[in-house]
Image (cartoon, rainbow, N blue to C red; front, side, top):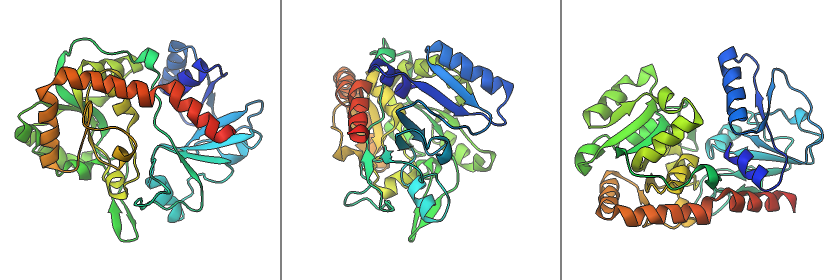
Length: 331
């Protein structure tokens, strides 16, 4: 929705398309509620169909088949899961790359020295995730005195590529289970946990992490925003695959915390090459540096809150991000 609202503010006619084959009545109803809530034109597809009359398509991870968008002049593959999409493709798993004219990724380091992600000969255009600042103003007083985040403990299995294992957030969190105790602070995660990850959940809870129901927190866009803005800041955990690949991934969720004036302590993926860190946005690479970053934010929360909002305005404002993206693909 950040893309839809941002593009509309730039003066474009926007349509949000979602494949819906097999979707429940509840899911269909939710989709309609969301597009009506934001006054965005939406379309649910029960079967593939050809699109005509559009100038540009931003095809998230190739979810729309290539033949359905073939008539659109500018066909952008929008990669929101960098490293994994490229490595799956290297293993022969079709990620829908074919049929696109441009390739855009939130893994800003892909194709640059030091990044291990295969490019497959494609010119990957790096972008930051846009935040529609009108919907994400600076937040009021903190009501949940904790560092929070929203996550899936595991979205899918790890990938082995050229002798390196690229894992999930569960693998990153195993080295951080003692963070609440070591930092002497409160950490609350709205996190989906698979039944097979019970031991990891127990280890996190034993270390002082508080796990809350992610379905409640993400029930609506407004509920999600309320959870983010009620927090003192974010503890941003990256998939270990993002960390190992140094792909430069940065979370759209973390960008929303920054826009809300909520500082972020984020696991390093190489994004510090493209974003200012040290005030409002702090990085960590292990348990010790995470403890240090949390301690730093606690020393002067007001200064870091102001810096967080300033970073969002300068780097994540949807007008800036999407204008730059469109110039890159429509030149």
